[in-house]
Amino acid sequence: MPVDSIATIGALPRLQPHVAPQHAGEAQSSVPFAGVLNGILGSNAAASANADAAVRDLATGNTQDLHTVSLAVAQADLSFRLILELRNRLADALQEVTRMQV
Image 1 (cartoon, rainbow, N blue to C red):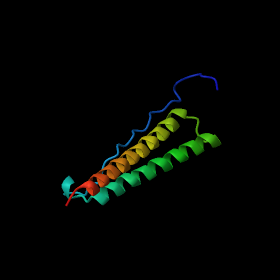
Image 2: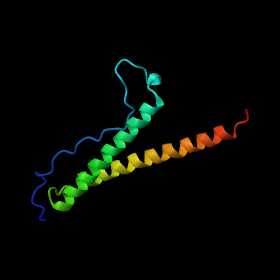
Image 3: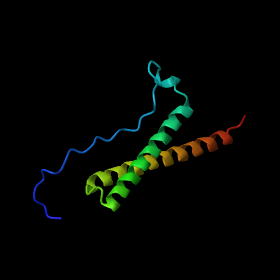
Image 4: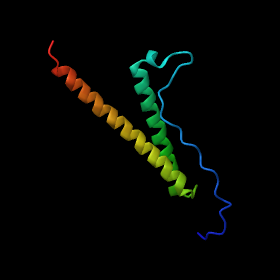
């Protein structure tokens, strides 16, 4: 692919941060823990689906923007790592609670 001009390069879409879903008018402490986890899992599923679609578009030739594809894959990877770290910390907390003497 010859490089003639950089005029064809468009602006990159902004990445959305992973935040817990918050209901209007409620404080952060009133959001149930299950809601926070479901929000994180939902954003992970969306990031994974977005990365899969971007890779599929690149493989089929629908897009040639490798940078956007790599960003989508990196975002899905970070989202997965966040969930993995949450799982590890929850497992450690459960082990700590089971070791407590009553």
